[in-house]
Image 1 (cartoon, rainbow, N blue to C red):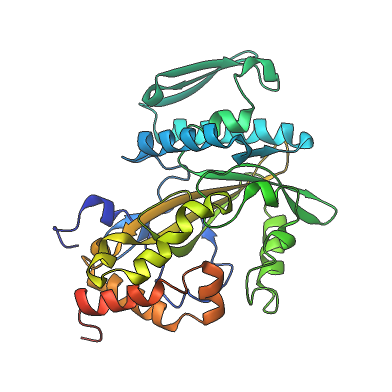
Image 2: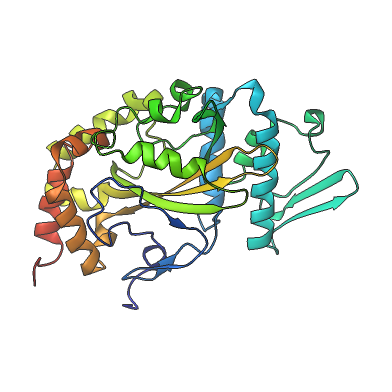
Length: 331
């Protein structure tokens, strides 16, 4: 690896080892280190990095402005507790100097030194927490989280805390089936991808953990590009497309979601964790192999997929900037 590559670049989950513009289940077991041309990522299921406090502050700001970013149908109470304990255990195992989970009889004690927080609680007793379990732990992780209930031969998105959505809305999707949620995605129904994905998820056994990546482009590194805030960020695509090409490298970001899929024990729900990473094109070109791959993927991306991802207007400026300011392709 080039020593000039900053740590944030080295740890970036670059998503294009092959023709991944094509939709597929793209799933692998979680927990192993994924090696890239710049470094690697993936050791922790719930990841804490140098942006921890900044991103949690942004999550709290969004929740204060719009509490509906947290949703939980009544029957998901057990799943909320299940998810909270699973996340706490994962954090305590990965970051034992910072976080711990202890139990003394029926009393649990959670400590998060990074937030100067200590909370005792009794499992299943809502009054022992200051807020619903999923919201409580969701405000302590950088990942968005959705809980899928399994019933009637289908999966249902019945709870979640999502503040960093990429052009979708938890408030709109809550209570929908897995197939309904993915209805707008092109090609995956005709090719059977979404039904295979649901079948795979429904076969997960308790404790099994898998991961996949997804990608799009975001202007100005904005985490919250939810449907609710479209009036705030939708114009950014136009200002980038109509602005000077020289500014594209700083403003246009490759946005990658690392998605973890975990079958919970007591509830049987599936926990869907989504961690969002972004890297400006000015950093992507520090790794020539990445710049070439991004250029190729954006150039080859079918129009319907570009439209679904919301990048129709901004992908050409990205291609042009890489060609002019990046590397010599095909060399």
